[in-house]
Amino acid sequence: MPVISGTVTCVANTRTAEQISGPNEFVQELSRVDLYGITSATPALCLCFAGSDVISDDRNVNFVGTSLDTSAHLLESVYVTPGTRLSLKFISTGTPTILWTVRITPV
Image 1 (tube, rainbow, N blue to C red):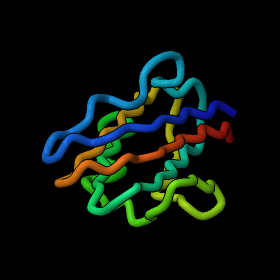
Image 2 (cartoon, rainbow, N blue to C red):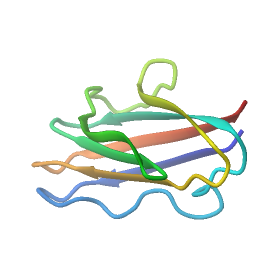
Image 3 (cartoon, helix red, strand yellow):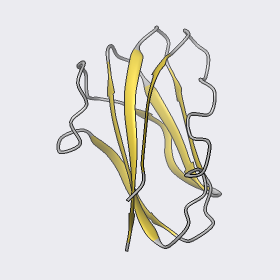
């Protein structure tokens, strides 16, 4: 079960660089993809794609804090097919730090 995690600090009114890269950028088998996130301040918005499907279109990251808990901070969950490319970016009008995790669970 691949897990991809990261932390990014947003620059005001600027979308972050692509957050998912490397060997887990493309899903290898039929899987459920869970996106978790928490922000140090609001507003923080999330843009997530699975292939050409929009999973989250500037959705609010409503969880505020300093510690990510995957049992409580689920933003989105989606099933994807093999070869699907995952894309994740954030934007904010302030400068929050966002902690995020993507868990890929084969089904």
